[in-house]
Length: 211
Image 1 (tube, rainbow, N blue to C red):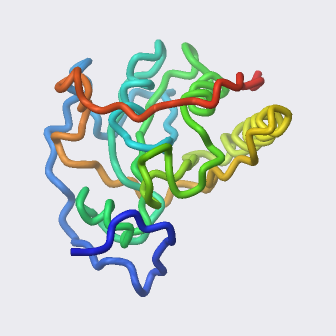
Image 2: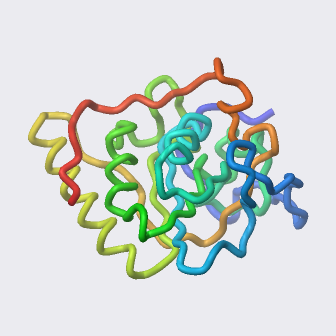
């Protein structure tokens, strides 16, 4: 078995090979019954956010008004169609993430980013609290070039807010989304299926000034 709690990302040459076949899921959101698979309703937008273990992170977003659907998965690495165990090995390069589809007429990207920043500690590098490893790093993957200026603005504003409170610097990775891989069915909406399950979300207590 691979060593756990990897704090270094693999290279394309050292990453696990993966597979051509996607992990099979029902495609139906356990909470709201909507499809987690594209196409999504016209006019809706998508963004991919990673803030530690995806169980609590996904619940955070599916509960927000204006969010159409969410899905747990993996992104930011090299291994195609990774398994949970492979991702946790640190040898895929992926982070645990949440795919968020939202209606911009009901909720804006700045509101989603505010929830993102305040729900975790984005200064911790390859970890979130006791969850240690590259799969738990803080990430934002955009799906539209118009999203990047809003993301960069929020990154800078929250970094400044944290530094003013002597909480360190933001280490969140920001990049265009290259690929999103759905996690296994049991991970989808995990905390709705297991209400007493683990939720690792813990913010810094520093308010996000994003407007």
